[in-house]
Image (spheres, rainbow, N blue to C red):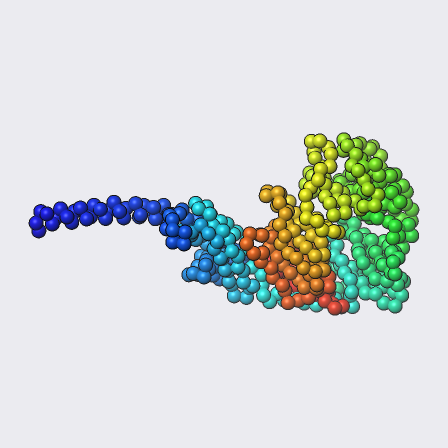
Length: 445
C-alpha cells in the first residue's frame, strides 16, 4: 500500500474518531437528539414501584418490563424530556395508566401505586339492617332497622353476628347517626322523624343492652361529644351555653360559647365575642389563646378543628388558621364549596377537603389544592392508606389515588353500597347493600 493511501486512511480514521467520539461520550452521559424539537437534550428516567408487584410495566406502548422475582419496581432511563405514558398490568387486578412529565437529568418517581383486585369477594355478615356503625376500636357493630313505631337494634362482634345482643327503641323515625365514646363502650344514637330529633344513650357493657332516652338533647343541641375522661358523660352546646351531662342531668359549664373542641384534658372554645380560650373539662381554669378577637357572625356556623399542632376555624365555606406567632386567625385559602369536611392523611402530610360534589387534596409540602374527583352524593370518605382514599358516590364504591399528576386513577368496584366503612386494622370493607351487611376480604396486599 502506497504511503499516500495509508495517509488518507489514517486521516479518515482520525476524522471519524473525532466525529464519533463526542457522540458516543454524549450518548454515554445520557444525551440524545430530540428529532421533534431538533436539538440535543439531556435525558431523564422513570422509577415505578407497585403493591403488589406488577405483571408488566409498559412505557409509551414500548417493550414491557417485569419486576424481578423479589422486586416490585423498575427503573427506565434515557427518556426524552417530555410526557410519557406508564401502563401497569397484572392478572386479576384493575389496570393502571398515568401520563408523567420527565425532566432533563431527573428521575420521575411513581412509587406508591396500589393495584386493586378486580374480583374482591364479599360475604354476608348480617341481615335485616338499614343502618350500621362500627366502634372506634373496630371490634363491635351496632345495626338498626326501622319498623312501625319501633326500631330494632343488634349489637355484635365485627367478626360474627351469630351471638348478637338484641334491643329495641319504641320510636318512630330512622337512625341518622351513631356517635361512640372514645373507649368504644358507649354510644349515642340519633333518630330523626319529621323535623324532630331524639337521642338515646347505649351502654354496651350491660349484660342486657338497652338505650335510654336523653330528654335534655333535642334538635337545638349542637356539637355533641363524649367526655374523653368519662365515657358516661357528654358535652353539648345549647343556646350558646356548653353543658356537661351525665345520666339524666346536664349542667352549664361555659356561657356565651359558639364552638368548642376537646383537646386532651382541655376544652378549646370560641366565645360569642370571638376570643379563643382554653379551659379544663370542668370549664374552669380559663386561659386566653388568641390575642385578637375574631369577628363572629351569629348567622354563620363555626367549628374548631386541629391538625397536628395547628388550630383551624371553619366558618361556613371559609377556613382560617391560627397563626402561632401572632395568635390571630388568618385566612386559609380554599376552594369555595359549601358544607365541606376536612380529613387529614394518616401521615399528616395531606388534607382531603370534600363535600357531596367535590374532593380536593391539599399538600402541606406544595401548599396548594388540587381537585381529584368530581361527582354526586359523595359520602363515607376514608383514607385507605397515605396515598389512596375510598368513598361512596351515588352508591358506587370508588377507590382513588391522590396523585394528581397527569390523570387521577380511580377504580369503581362492582359492589354497590348505601353505607360503607373501612376497617383500617383488618383492611376489610363493610358495606350495606339493601338490608344486608356484607364484609369483604382484605382489599389491600
